[in-house]
Image (tube, rainbow, N blue to C red; front, top):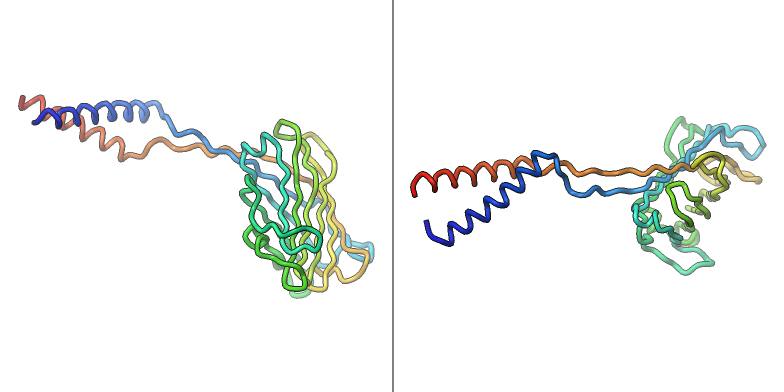
Length: 234
């Protein structure tokens, strides 16, 4: 065995020892984290006539924010095809995901009539040529439950939806109000628009890395075996 090979082996053994110690202690890579914001409807959607929507129209939405952006506060602005704002067709830094959904049994039975994610929203355009979206959501202050403000608007030529975030309704829980007008499957054909309300909740999620895979342990055993062979024949 040459000197260089011996040095390589020693370096490998040092790495091996560190890897084994990490495995034995359950050490893992630093955790990633995100903050999930959910809009959840409470109570029925009220139809244009003032009574409950005949199709049990139900709204939900979710936004995922990178944890460091959440902690320092933000003012997300995303616009695609609005008459009043210049187009901004890329996701704001720190907005990892955004999506909305409507479910109704209006007409032909229960079905999802809107299901847009962030990629869909980035592609929508002004109603004259397709879709339109305007999102303006901000957060000031510190702490997981600091107040959110703003809202969002979407129009796909058949349906117009406007959602405004309201004040706190409980510890760490805000309210929201929704207005919807539709020439299509939402079933809100007349003025005033359909209305609903609900809560905005915030959850911080940590994604903890698992320990190094078993391949590191196999490498460790192999290097230790080589060391044993070298001691035996020297």
